[in-house]
Length: 34
Image 1 (cartoon, rainbow, N blue to C red):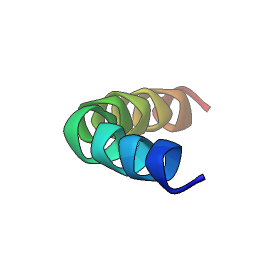
Image 2: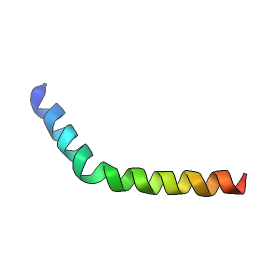
Image 3: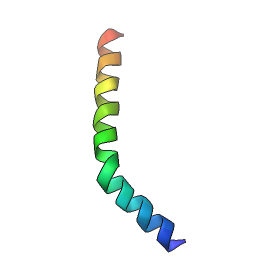
């Protein structure tokens, strides 16, 4: 169990930051259109 968790944490630190930025930008565009 510990190994997949550490891999997920490492993946989160490496790639999820840019994914979160893209998601936040998309949310801002949607909110502006609403």
